[in-house]
Length: 52
Image (cartoon, rainbow, N blue to C red; front, side, top):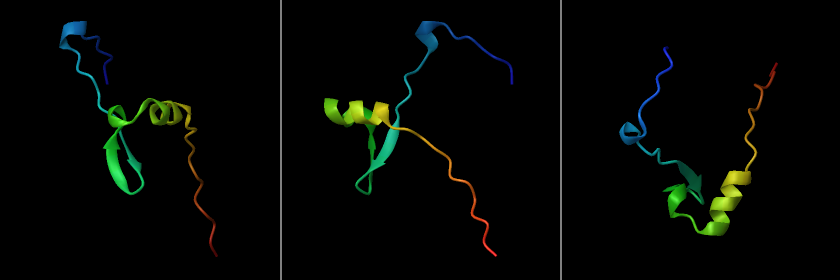
């Protein structure tokens, strides 16, 4: 895929959603404390289990 640079006026803000307490909510709707907590989260990938 070719890397493209768009002019600032053609760019669109991306809305990030996450699941909190069983509900999907946009991060922009969180209060300041919850937004800060979301920024500090550490993401990880769990390896597949080796069942026999």
